[in-house]
Length: 213
Image 1 (cartoon, rainbow, N blue to C red):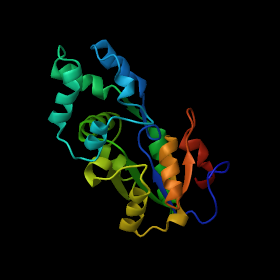
Image 2: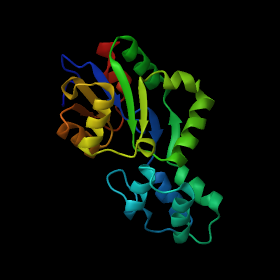
Image 3: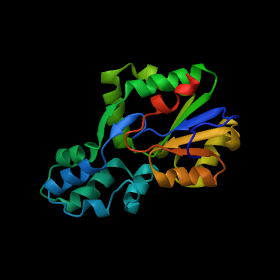
């Protein structure tokens, strides 16, 4: 789907988290790790592709400590606290206006869901950050269900992930819109038969979805 974000018959919207509802910066971890002596971090982790270790973390198949040990091997002089901080600097802030928009969308009768590729380390951090900015229960109540990849063991952009979320909730993919800031995730949703919108840098769902409010 391009141009108009919505078509008639959209009854459900699945939202990405980072870059859509929570501001992130993919460049900051690379800078932080380079400052610790890990000069080639961008070849390991980007918005478009990443080392298999990150996939294991994002599907809950590796323990947090083992993952941090993996990173520490590349910066042996750094403390565990420095490594953890460098990994978490990608997380900036929740965007309350965007969350309010999702609330209004849900109140209008459209079913709303969150589907995020993330990991237990980041979840612990960003949930605390959200709670410092707004009522965390208010954030959660914007969605019928929240799915973190590390908790469900599957991730985007695999079409099976989108189909599984639809199956769990009785959603018709043809009536479901997916919104994400990563092109490869949008492509995966389209292959699964969903409508999908690639949120470009600087775009906000609160502006795009005004016609529903």
